[in-house]
Length: 416
Image 1 (cartoon, helix red, strand yellow):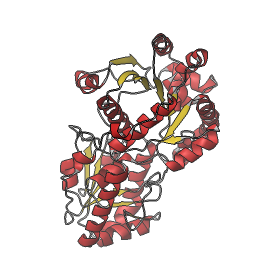
Image 2 (cartoon, rainbow, N blue to C red):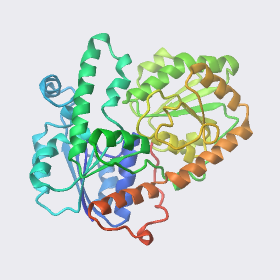
Image 3 (cartoon, rainbow, N blue to C red):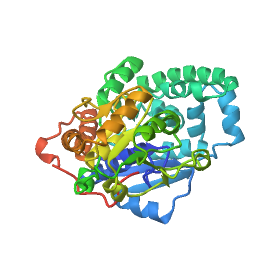
């Protein structure tokens, strides 16, 4: 198939779960022989390493610059336009709209638009052409602002509520126009189906299981590991909760416990605010495997649900026992006590961690169950099969089981 795929960011380097999803799905579809043109808007210029990672997978790579986040146009549009703020930031881009219109003059078997917030430059052209297209949504986007409401200054909260209302209207409008809608989990699919008034298909988030298969965790290391992209408020909120309320209780029972914090855009002020040698401020790592080998537990005290957390899948694929919250495993069909341990209360999480670190056999049981679950349900080969099925159904052509790969070759580097 010839696929026109649009993205509001470059999917390399892999600094977030969304980028991990995009890179591995692009890679998997390319290995299946599909010819993909990737049209992206990026706030960072295309560098040689990114070009080298992406171009072998693509028929064409087209990268257009995105306005700076603090552009006056973004501020003015967010206050006055009929679009929600994220749609303004990632849209209202004439150069992108014109390039997309030019590309629509070619023949495409599938047009895939990633994220409703990136849809604005493409809407008129798709309406005029009448071409079928797919919209892929990584979570129920209108809920994102509401989840961070309590973290905002009081004066900003009314605007945030108004923008959430605008985004719900916008997301409904986008989903209603799409020929096919993709979600990353069954619970998100149900919510998006109610919003757009049509069935929604699931293409799961995944992990390159082969990349992590030789890792064994270190049950006696007393090191907890957290991984996240700190541009997202859910990850910042998780660390602040952990360091203010959870870890002090853990340290009362076991002062030797360490917490390694890994991820893109780690706030520098945190190092000064929480100046404790037991906190390891690692920052972004292109390959997590060595640190995973030196860690005892993956700890994800997330308080916002939605989507499907790639970082948890990676931890399970690496055999790390997981301690998290119900929000942390939202979108995953896992069982507390079998695949992970969890709680919602800070005191209960601290007690769970303290007990688990003294139970190597229990840690091993969680490790094996989590790894088996991910191999069966969330390897990227499973997600690629699902995505190809959506594309084939859009074309009303059946997918033959014998055409599908058992597994994809391992990527050279894992996401952080």
